[in-house]
Every structure is written in C-alpha cells, then in structure tokens.
Image (cartoon, rainbow, N blue to C red; front, top):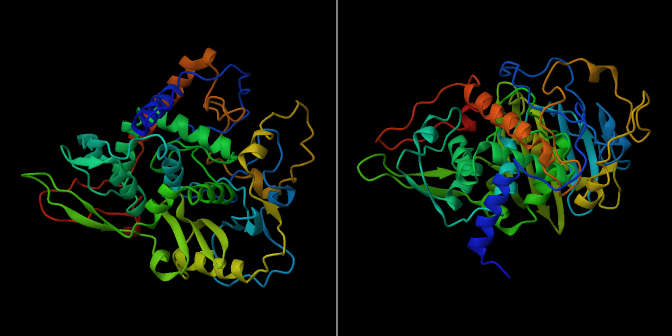
Length: 436
C-alpha cells in the first residue's frame, strides 16, 4: 500500500520517536567504541586547549582516506597557493560532484559545531515532518536561550516556516518546536545521530537539536561537508537554504509579526551560492558551511573554530571557495567524501589489540592533549547503516535514560539568556549578534 505524503510523514515521525527504543536485531556497539555526550562535565565555555580529539570510523580507519588523518594542512598537487587570512583551526574544501577533497586542515578534528549542527537537524527532520502542519508555540519555546527567531506561546507556525527560521535566523526556538513535533528532543537526537552514522559522519555527536553547547557534542570539517553535500541534493532543503526573507506571524492581541532575513550573506554576495549555515558559541567560536555551484562544478566548504578578525569567517569561506574553483577540475584529491554505501562498510569495529588499523593515519602528539569535547562511552551511534542510532532493543531502556539525561543536560546548560519578545515589533538576537 502506498502512503499519501502526509501519512508517510506521520509514519516518519513515529519512526523518529521509535528510534529511541527499538532497533533491528544486531550486535551492540561495545562500550567505549563511540564518542558520546558527557553529562557529568560542565557546559563548555571556551574552545579546547590545543587540538581537539580526532575522529575515526568505527573500524578505526580515517574516513575518506589516510591523508585526511592529518592535523595540519593538506592540498591536492597542482592547486594554487592557499589564500592568506585563513585562521580557522579546521577547514575543508571538496568537489561535491566527484567527492574529491581538494584541501583541508585538521579535517577530522572533532570541534564544537554551534549552529552548523542545524544542517543535520534539517537533513533529519525535513523528510519526515508534514511541512503544512501548524505547530503552536509554547512557553518552553519562548524560554529557549541563545539565538531565537521569536516564537511566542499561542503563536501558530507551519512546520515549513519553522525549518526556514531554523536555518535563516538560527532559531533555537524553532529547533525546539521542530524536535517537539518530531516526538521530542531525545527522539530527535537519536534520529540525528542515526542520520550522521548513515552518511559516514562518524565525528558527529548531536547533543542538542540546535547546536547549543554540551560537553561531548562535536562535528568536524569533514562531517559538515558531508552533511551539506547531501542537503543541497534535496530540492526542499536547498529551497530552505536559499530563502532570503520570511514573515513570522504575530499573535492576535499580543506580539506583532515581523520579517526575518537570511544570515548567510554569501547568498547575495557570492554568485552561485546554493546555501550555507552560520554558527557561533563561546566554545565553538565561529563556524560555517556552504555549497556553491559555478559552470557545472559544485564545491562545499566548511570552517570550524574561526575568528571574525582580522578576516570575517564568511570572507574566509569565500577565499577558500575562490581557491577551490581555481584548482583544476581534474587535479584529483587528497581524499574523498564517502557515500552511504562506503560508510556502511566502515562500521565494523576493529579487533582488540594494541595496534591501530593500518588505514588510519597515526595521530600527531597534539591529538592527545585536550579533555573535551567528548569522552567515549554512553550513547552510541549506529553500528551499521539501518541500525538503531543508540543500542539494540535489548538495551532500549538504558538508551532512553541516556538521551533523556541528555535533554536534562541540554536544559540546564549555562547559556546567555535572551528575554522573550513582547508586543512590540522586534528582531530577536541571532548568531550574527554574537549569541548562540
């Protein structure tokens, strides 16, 4: 029987919620085999001192090729000199069409992602929620901390508008409302981690649907590029990313409506931009990911732990994109963006023993220094494409406790508070204001 679109999306929501409790039969991921959110640690307020932990596939290999195991710079032979002014601690430029990675710095460093994690929220929930469903704003939405689009209690917001608010103005309140609609924050996080694992984004651990910092949450320049590559392949997600302005409705007798604008200035300033997502927290600093297409060639760029001075992070992205387009299309790559089929082959954990997998590049001494972002153990990502993102059904109760505790940690994390909007027309703070 073929389901209608609304029924398919409702079924998808049930699958999102059910992912917390049930998964196909299969071996559990061994404790300590996967990174996890650490609820015992305080909310991070600054970047990790030194280099962050380095990610790897569950089988111990470096995803995309051994050359991407570097903590330093790597570029394809024949590429022009790298541009000046790039201070991002981690970055990557890749050809989204061929998957070839043209250049990178610390591509598998596991940094705090800030609001660039919302790209994974969109990728995960976009296909399963009914875009026409109207969601009522709640007091919890009003109280969400950090960057907000300004949802108010009693307001009526279509899911489609919430997705646009999520991306355009980095609305943490929109992320909260979407997660609630998808079955709750724990279910949404489980689904996000499953999506990441299926893509091969093994450096990514989602601890909040918004990207607000929790200890152990992470992504990498490589993973952000994987996620953005997939997003711009989807017509709906690409339309959301390219939206320039949208109208937030008011509430009769209460808050007035107002217009929001997209924070990704590349849409207006950099020809061929398909979409991008900004991010900022004190711990992540500035993050950004985007995709651009010119003359039939599509590139993705990602930056993590960048600063705004002396060169704005979006200007850094433009310079790296200029460099990428100047690199000959036939130059090859220093690695590749994997597809889901290849990612599925990387999910068998390595056999026990002191020797690392030969496919994984040996880490430099800097890789061992930091205490965060994440430790290992606790909530797990999928062991194979198609499995539960947490644990098999036999450990479902424990998994639910872990993700529920994650929700508690998310709510209690120390943030810079933003007051709820009143009746006057106002624009709530966003990432562009230096908030989260």
